[in-house]
Length: 285
Ligand code: AMP
Image (cartoon, rainbow, N blue to C red; front, top):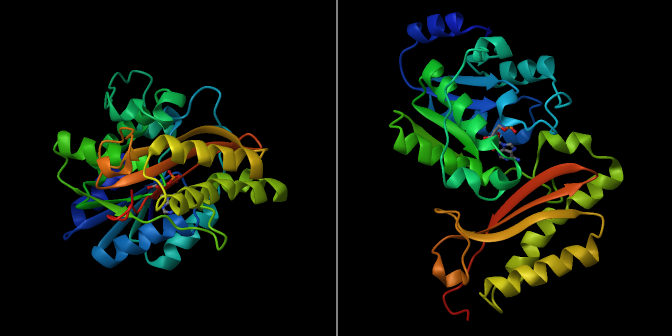
């Protein structure tokens, strides 16, 4: 595996390869969730590039940019063992200059849900991905459904800005108890780790109610009560049921062919997210 640190080296490497390049952008601290994206890319492309870059532009001033876990050596070993062709590990200076002016924003999708709490977060994501897509020139780019709003934003950006690549969605990889894998899970103490299961549990609980009611206000009220009673230490940021294409809230599950529940919550001050498609049986009322 080539470990590439500069745009110039990447350009040189990219000029030499023929056939489709699969691209997996990450912020490192790799776990099985990331690796499932990498495996999918390796299966679908003769070349796979994985970037590891903790992107300062997608963190707010009060967020965890400085303490975000950085485990580069282990990450590179994992990627090498999987058979990745090249990793791109640029410095901040390689990606941004103090003279930069460009700003990319999806005015609607980026301001909903996580975007309304993490102001500018998705603009930072869109900017770094635009830069990375131009450098890597992938045929396919792989994103996890764990960050569901992110994958929708990337799909919309790629479509609207005519990026010549396909966005591939990869299902969420979970721990055996259902907790969605995340680099931020490393911050949790054993008792926080036990509380963190709340996010998946409440999503599952909502799914169990669906055969009884498709009315979203009922589902959300019951879900919030479940969280308060079973997981009083978890601080809910939002729980929503949306159409998974537009990410707009719906009032009844039958309003959407693909309803999905989204959640963001704090456990021991660590912000966690998860989501689950809701299966609404035709005969339900
Ligand atoms: P990150 O390093 O957090 O920016 O994530 C890099 C990519 O890995 C994103 O496309 C994430 O959606 C994806 N990812 C992170 N955790 C998981 C997971 N548990 N399952 C599937 N994909 C994931």
